[in-house]
Length: 584
Image (cartoon, rainbow, N blue to C red; front, side, top):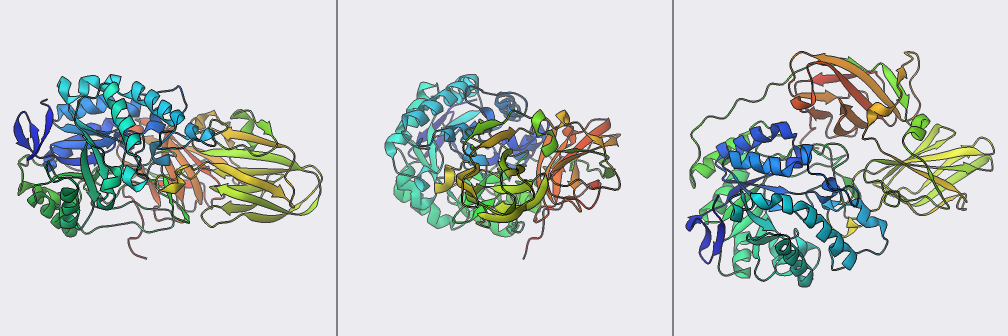
């Protein structure tokens, strides 16, 4: 593929004028067997380019590791895009925001108290250099300069909203060059942050979802010559637990796209297809109150969470056709959906009872953070012995993010960061009673000053005003739910406290489906070991998307970790999703 050039009068490709009409599609939020379908629908919309972030923390969950296979096989994604005739905009971070856990920054960076993220701290820059040194060499054949689909590469991400250290941006740009990126570089900032987030010799672009004329004017004022581009044209939004499902009117969004294209600007539609925060990968926001993002990243995008075109897709296709060629081919039909019916979960395993099978506790005079334990995602269990029976008050300086408290295995309450809770009263039944605190990392903050978001029981933790002398801190990796020993459930009893429930169902022909957990409270679900993500009865989302490639012909296995209690032993696989109400 020809190489992109930046000229005073706009982009040029193969020495011809070129306008980038792109859509965001994150390979890590879509099952790899569905990449080709989504990319084909991008081309049929009239897009000539797709954009993707790269999540450092998923490729390198622990320092010294780097994964580039399975759902993280970025070269395969780039091959699939090229086969569809699409160019690619690559946004490798190191910080990506994206409503993604920690904004893509790996949790092991937080193990050092005084390390400063997104800065010239030598330890941070050294880690970034290692990351780019692992990521970029395998991508060299995919650079446009080598005939590949990648047109341009972003430096950092919306840095102007975070800081104004131009030398930091220059260090990152130099790293990209040193690791072989010889393509145009660009930055992306909201219009008010352009001056703080730009770098000489690097193309500035903007992000906005409305007020198109004002946004482009700010960009032109900042850079009098060269192409205008909105690298994040926001056409929807994300959802948070306890909120509503966000929608944006299709006609309103399409009208803004028309204004943008009529002005001659290039665009990247955010999102073309949002996908799903599978497993524990959702991020969170904290502007005084902690707000975790839901599992679905539907985003009210042009393709919905399952990859089907929405009315917004049709409206945008009509607009693009007024400004650029659109393929005359019909869209492929929506993928089939299946309702596999109710599934009884007939076997159970208590989580706390089997904690010993998950790892060895680490002894210390205080609770250790997840980062100190080298544990990136999920849960950590803290235990200590209470010497004196009678009334007690547990006080935690900072709960990150949700702590379930047990005395001798019996639940006595919950402390939630979101509700600014710090203290819990209970009765100690006997000398030497065991206090256990199960803490869930509900998603590291992905935007703003709260990025340095360690997880666990932070600061001073006391019982009746005194810190216990000895704590046992245990990481609970849940990437292998099949390692638990499940027993046949007693129909007359419901488990007390966190438990894994397992059942099987038979599939004749795999198809997309949706797991509904009516009567369940809060937890995580897997099918055949694939992590579907978190559920929570508070909503708005009340179903989890199950991609067809996760299923197999014949018996399939569902595992549900319920953290509290359930009124039923059944879950339901239906052919329709429920992302929640759109109005309060």
